Structure formats: C-alpha cells, structure tokens
Image (cartoon, rainbow, N blue to C red; front, side, top):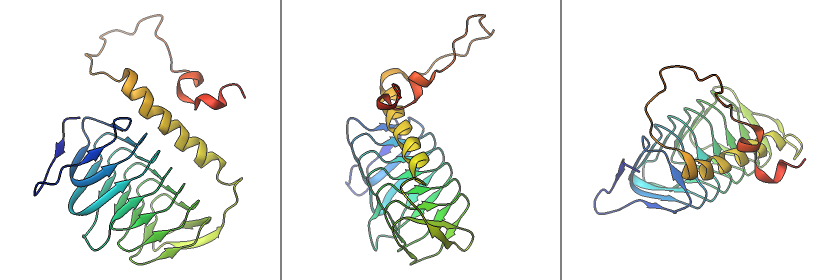
Length: 200
C-alpha cells in the first residue's frame, strides 16, 4: 500500500485482511474493515469527514468515496460499488449493489438488498427502501426486488471477497512477457469463483 496519507493527524485504519490496490489513494479518516477489496485508482478521501467500509464490501476501479463532513459516508457489510461510481456523504446499506458510473449524493440512505442501476443519479436526500431497484437520472424506484433477483449480486460480491484473498496471496508487480508462450494458462472457475460454490 503506497498511497496512504494522514491529514491533521488522522491516520487511515485498514484491517490486515483487506486488500487495497497500490494505485488506490486513502486519505485521513477512513476505516476499512475485514475482507474489503479496494480496486485500482479508487479514491477514498476522508479529509472532510469519516468514511467507513464494513466487512466484505468492495469498491472497484476509479470509484470516488467522499463526503462533506455532516454525516459519515458508510458502505455497509457486503456493499458492492461498481467501476467508476461516486459515493458522496451517504449510507449504502447491507448487501447493496451500486452499478457502474452511478452517482449517489449527500444524505441518501439506500436500504439493504437494493440495486442502484448503472449510470443512475441518486439526488440528495433520497431515502430508498430495502429491496428496491433504482435506475435513471434522476433516479426512481422501478420495482421491489426478491432474494431470487439478488442471487447474481451476491455471487459477484463473493467473487470480490475472494479476489481480496487472491490478491494478498498472488498479486505482484512484474515485467511483461514479450512473446506469447504456447502453454500460457487461463484463469479457471476454480480460481475465481467463491470456494463454497465450486462443488455445485
């Protein structure tokens, strides 16, 4: 972890089982819990207020997490923040998916087991009930979800939880190969999928 900064004497707290990509930037009052994955070029700026990522949550490449200090910015357990999303001064509930390039603004509360669609704009102060599918700009509640609807989301989050462990175990900086080996391996389902699903 190279880009970890204190500000005004406040140092980020990162659980030893969390994985933070070396190109991610973590500043100030940021608390990252067990099994969290923080992807390449993500920015978590706890320079105005507290950011909390709870156990098993993930933020992917180029996400921005920030706030204005009036309330903590929280990603609850198993929260899943897709590539390029912006999370600003809000609460993302347990087992919520925020789709790619979505924006969730200040004082929003997203209820557990909800999905925010890709590119959605969730305006300031919106309160989203549990099990909601939300999409559009400005975002609107489209329908109520079921546990069956959430199966794909749960699998995706479990893959990222495994990716945190895989990254600790095997991610390394290397020089590229100049030629394609004839016996070049591919990643397998056994390497990528959650371990408890491999026998199903």
